Structure formats: C-alpha cells, structure tokens
Length: 385
Image 1: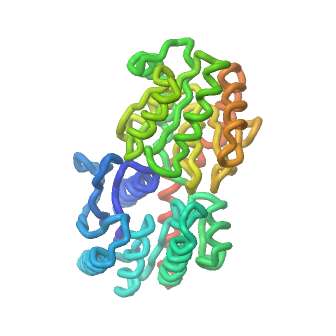
Image 2 (image 1 turned 180 degrees about the horizontal axis):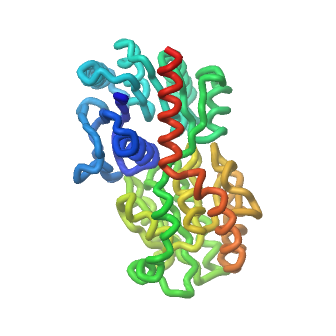
C-alpha cells in the first residue's frame, strides 16, 4: 500500500508522535511505501525528525507554517499537491489544522482513492474570538466534505465535531493514541537515578506536568495551586517537563510566589526520555484547557501513576474520580489543591489509583493496535471505492 501522511510540523508533541508511530509501523510491520510531508519544525518545541528518525521518505515544504498566511498557504498547497502527484498514493492521511486542510484539498484535487484526517484536537475552541472560531469551523466543514473518513482520538472529540456540524457521525472513527507501552511499563526502573539527577530526595512527593510551555496548557493554574499545597505539604515538589515560549513568564511567576525551591524545569526533552521522567514522578497533573486526549495521561497510567486532570475533551474516558485519580472542572484551583493534598499525603491511594490505571490503559494505547486499526480503515475504504 502507498500511504502519504501530511502534517503541519513535526515538533515534539502528541499528534506528531502518533504520526511518527503510524508511519514507522506501516513500513516495518506491513511493508508499505510511506511518504511524510511536513513543514519546518522551528521554535523551542524541538524536532521529532532529528537524526533520521522517521523511518520513511520525508519531504519538507518550507511554506507550510502554522500561522495563517495566504501567500505562504497558496505556495504550500501547490507544493503538497506536487509531492503527492509525484508519489501517487492510494491513501492520504492528514493531521493538524493547516496540514489537514491543505493536504485534504490537494489530495481531493488529485482524486486520491482514500483521504483520511485525524482530529487530534479541534482547531476551534471557546478561548478564540467568535470570528476565529467561525472561520476554523467553516474550514473544517469544507475540508471534511473532501475526505472519506475522520478519525478522532476520543469519543468526546467525535461529539464535539458532530455538534459543530463538521461532518455526520457515520464519517467518524475513534482510534486511541498509540504509545510505546513497554517503555512506560519499565519507567520505574530508573526512578531513583532520575530523581537524584533532578535533585529530589526519597521523601519528596513529585507532582509532574508534561506539556509545552504554551498558552492554554494550564501551567498557571498549577503554580497557583502549588502555593497552597506546599504550606500543608512542604515535601511536595513540582516538575515541568517540556519547553516553550512561556518559560520565562512562568519562572517569573514562581519567583514572585517564592516557590523557586519547589519547582524544576526540564527544558526540551525527547520522547524517549519521557518514561524516565514519569518514573521520577508520584502524581501527574493535566491542567490543559483544551486537548483531544493528552498522551501524558495514559503514559502516566501505564507507568502506574495516578492522574489529576481537568474534565476537558477525552480526559473523562480514562480518568475516573476515586478510581484512577481525580477529574476536575477546568479552572477549579480549590479542587486541584484538595486533590493534590489527598494524593501527596497518601502513598497507598497513589498506588491503588496507579494500578487500576495501568490495568485499563496498557493494551488500549499500544501503537501497534492504533496502526492496525488505521490500516484496517484504509483497506475498508479502498475496498469500498
């Protein structure tokens, strides 16, 4: 099978890791011919494709950038279409907002037999201006009419897209994100070594957050909660895994609150390092205000860690209050403080939540299962043409 994937950029992020796993699995497990079309990965988020990690043919489109730019977008569309025409794929699978729209339009103009798009997270949300929200919703509807199937990473994403009238419900398929499960099952093997490296002592209870230091990721809320948590639990420590444009601002807020000794920033880390950082944690917190289904949540569960998450998008499908962690209303700082107090103070509760989370997620989120379902969808759609 000849499959082309199109994505705006291959930064260190969840949608990009999913795409990379899919491309590699299609080549390694099924012998498919795979092309990855992507824009440049500039900025502090890093590049997943360093050191030839793609495992398939890659072409870069310099004009394919995240911000809306009509001039560059026109160039990007023509470039994507040219690369797809040269490759002659049976399937084009697109990801992310810009790459998703331009890739689907280019594939449709070439009459590619099967066009699929994955919604890793809706590009429209309540935190945008009404005009921006309307524009992104219109773009998604227009592009959805030019593909054969839409894949979502959680049921909540399907409901969101259907309610926004992006496409009818029967056009959607849910396929959970794919992870290298074995790495997270072994994440605690390096726990003591990683904690010493980060400056944490055995008695510290480490509360981690894995996310780009970017808008709507909720780092501010965790800093606010930390001020109350450390008063009652002075052995609590906070670990921010990731980098981004807001680092300086967040560090300034931490200094202003006199919390420097309680926080540690890792900076940019590779996906291969994430298991060891989760192993060093005792609790994972996910305070993002929008996300399809954050990979960090099943990653933490597979590693046997409890999770506190805002109840956004797909989080409720894996985080169960009183069973695997705590699910909170977005922005509920008091609830965040209360949940952290309970978990910091009770090692047995942390362990029991983590065990149940691992049992529920280990098989569900393996990348081989994800790719098998996606390839099955390709075959089904091809057979129907």
